[in-house]
Length: 145
Image (tube, rainbow, N blue to C red):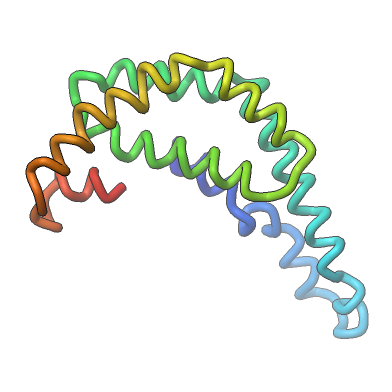
């Protein structure tokens, strides 16, 4: 589910229907579908996605999932990566709901306390102290995530 959410924050997801419409147009009409309309489409998609993240308590769901994984610090890697990628992508594109998302994240103190700090303390710091790891190991793949 987290990876699907990450995909929805990409420009590919925003332009999924637009690409098929552009391919079906004649070359003359294709020029009319310019950067401005694609940017408008992307901003509309990101605004709706940010609104959904806030309205449907997605951050709370990530925190609840992380609470269940506290006994398995290595399993937090993919979850933290998905969460941070989703937030990064939503804040990357200019949208009118960026401020709302930032405020929403600022009000969720348990995100930092229960997800990001344990991941840093239990996974990242020990990995840095341990030095290089085998790229084929499960531990290394979780850290790279």
